[in-house]
Image 1 (cartoon, rainbow, N blue to C red):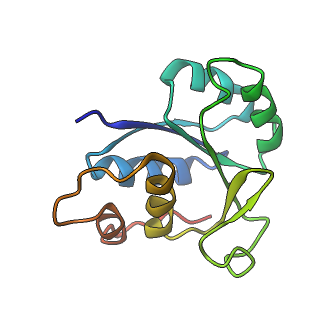
Image 2: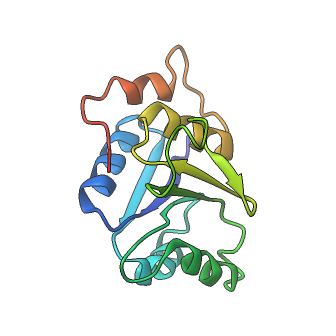
Length: 146
């Protein structure tokens, strides 16, 4: 089975490293990371992801500007993007995220089970057998948090 490629763009290296390690541990995802918003489009061109997890607030280029640049590229414009942000609380997003402007926003810190659920909603459910990725992710001792 082909692993789904996910690009995680966040200025916090610890966060991207933990998300990568956790998602790849499921065996269903190949995760690429980028810690500079200005390099996000180049990273997307390189890895051709099925999904982009994108921080909203980054020092060099915010997530909104990254999405605008992605939209200008014919090969990248249809890649689904899920925003990750500490600018809203989990309570404000009802813990499952909020959709604004056609994009889903998830509040940080995010529970890994919620992150996996969001990924599955966008990409479909891989053939998990008797286990789910959400259960695998919550069993991981290191939960990415911001």
